[in-house]
Image 1 (cartoon, rainbow, N blue to C red):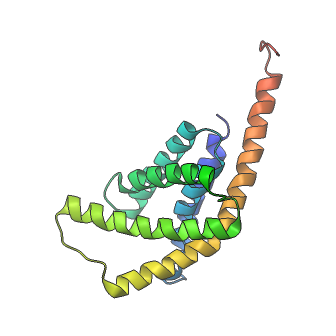
Image 2: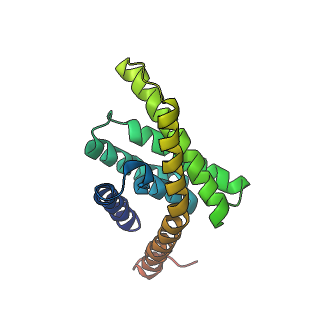
Length: 178
């Protein structure tokens, strides 16, 4: 349980950092740090349910900060986290190159799903176009570059937090040691 709070703090810090970076770096070149944290949680969280709960909170936090449709980021990030978890069982997403390729693909999925949900729920007919597609490609490249570093940071943070949790369980009074 103690491992949830540092991960939520890092996820919320990623939202704040992304907002700060976006003031200096043009939007297509600014990585989506919170999305990369959601991918890393899918890869490194010990159990699926806990990871999905943390990603849901981060998604709703992003919805509040970004002004998007409520639940849009949470829904997409649930799928992203689950797909990272499932894909890591079949593919070796722990390596830098496969993780970068996965993050780039997820960025295209994220943009398409966001556009689809906005069109569906807001009854608009927005299209991406070539310029929008090129911006998403630039954004996917930025996410691919930063994905291995964010994943490594989350792996170290989760290893530290989970080790601390298991140490407390072993030392707690009244627990039977088997």
